Length: 307
Image (cartoon, helix red, strand yellow):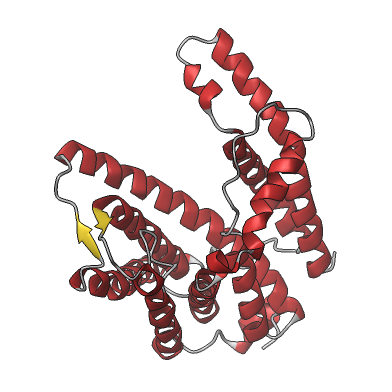
């Protein structure tokens, strides 16, 4: 199947299927909460979160058929192999991710736009770090396999890889702007479609998209460049996991300060400030010099990549 057609079918299945599946999952949660001791919390899950989980579930289940339709039948084709040292590339990604985060967070803290909160107990901090670590590993592995391994990998078979890099990074940025909708009153088979439409409203709110969309696009381009130059996903996985981990810790361990210029410095997630856009733009330029030259011509031919 043509790569663009395969990606289109995958998107329709994930979003349309997620909207259809969500009400059933909601009723299953209600049924389990009423009949299984200790499952009371299931009844309290907001419906928009169930819609999110439905989309994620179908994205996971559809990933293997997507890769098969893209003829990604080897570990190399999906970015999980390569000629470089895997452990070193992963470690390099972890370190570079932290340094990038520090270049954004340190000026914010030094300027007093946010302040570290030392009032938390040690058990709370350890629990927060454990949760952040689990989230970082899961998000980095899944998103890198999907956005870099599958989507960027497919697009660079159709377009030259720089164009594929920009396009796949824009897609990566857009899917992070789902709006949190209000809690649905009554759940019917059409409720998933209603909530999905409300979630898409975040795509047309300029105050949410700018500069966050461009910041995440640069982030995706940095990760994609790391994949293109190293030939595998280990460095971008480390990069991505480090970002997610430290951003989770930063959001939990810092507080906003009165009068801070959030427009420039950003809020607890940092990407909504112009400082993050400036730093990641500079990091992308530096990454072009830091990472090794592009993959050998022989490997590009093997993967049918347009150079």
